[in-house]
Length: 95
Image (cartoon, rainbow, N blue to C red; front, side, top):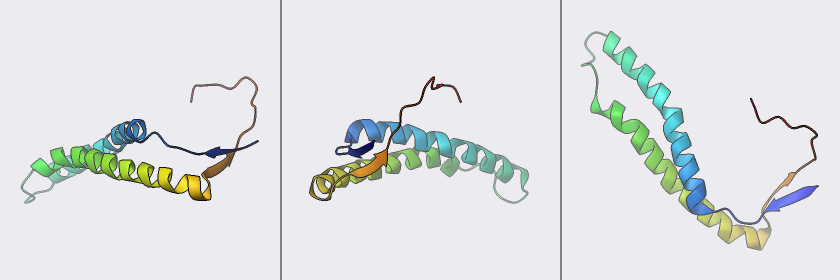
């Protein structure tokens, strides 16, 4: 069965992706901080390591909001993203 996404809810999508971007960037920042602390002559911990996940989430939020807005303008004119679905018996929700 073919389906089309005709509209993306901008605010809900941006909230979810902002949290996702923050969550994805956090382990990298923690690892980078530990590496920087272990290296001699690097000056140790920087405030940028704290700001990076926050800025990643903020910019992710803004660009996703813009992307959803553009998608909602374009989709009615040329069609939305198409995907195929199928029925699955006993679908498990666990990973």
